[in-house]
Image 1 (cartoon, rainbow, N blue to C red):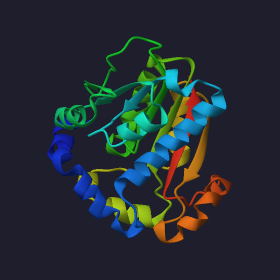
Image 2 (image 1 turned 90 degrees about the horizontal axis):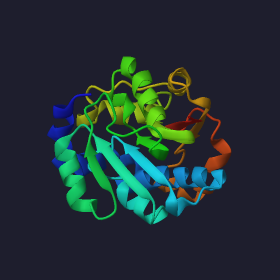
Image 3 (image 1 turned 120 degrees about the vertical axis):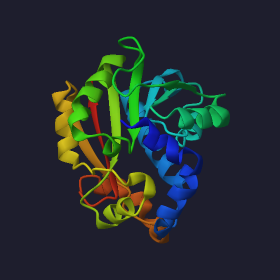
Length: 232
């Protein structure tokens, strides 16, 4: 994981992201909240008390997801890690009142075993060489309690609009998109139990009236993004 690569774009991350996804008709915050709401549904299905869970936001960047964690998990213990020191500085200034921001060396997470209930990563792993995925998933599993759950969100390389957006995004210059089945296999190889895939983000803003149907299409591999989840 290249710290300097992320430091370079930290200050202009949102504006670059907004420009890159303009065709969707949505702001970056829409996609950030979409993912956190998916995690909230997962927590609710577990029967966990959302307010008391311990959550790891892996690769938090400038903290784009943090206000939505604060909204949907108002009393949760949220810890955000990243390799980019500049991103962490920005995140701390903006959201340090509701999350803890901690630097990560890109190899070993600075936490004891079984520290968290849930681990979350939003479109992080396409920035990381595929050969490092399994080891990092094993680290995430290590810091999860037994029975804890991981949710890894990624861009779907089977969706041509997603591929185009990634190819034209400055901070995705070195990105390697990951097929959902390969990410699921990496989670299984790291010891996560029963990993499964859900495809997400099917309708742009112009078709927002259809978004209530998205859960019905979670099996269909044409969504703009997907997540893979499994238990430690």
